[in-house]
Length: 145
Image 1 (cartoon, rainbow, N blue to C red):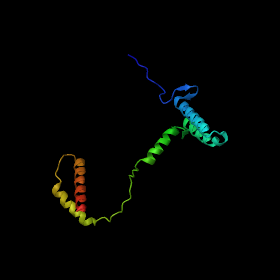
Image 2 (image 1 turned 135 degrees about the horizontal axis):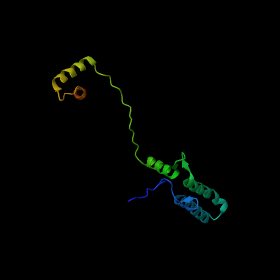
Image 3 (image 1 turned 45 degrees about the vertical axis):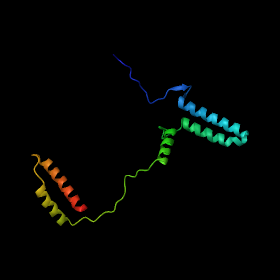
């Protein structure tokens, strides 16, 4: 049985002339809010500035795309979530500690490694990797004490 695969799924359907449903809702909402401002204020000369701001925002939401790709509403939503949410800082600078003297630390690791590292396989690469992991854990345990 054959099925048709939808194509151009990123493109929104034009429902109202050359406008998508979202664009139409933004423009009608901006027009409605402008009318409400005009009715509440009663004077067109005084209401002109708020109406102009409301219409500029609604036209921007309907048509402007940041970097030609991202709709303004998505950018505004992301900015609001960032502003309200917790900030997670991944990188934090830590003070560097002076490394211990290499000769005594190397001798201790060598002594522990010769006693604790058994032969687990015939592969030399696996043995080397395993022994390095053991030496690293021994070295970090010594430094923590």
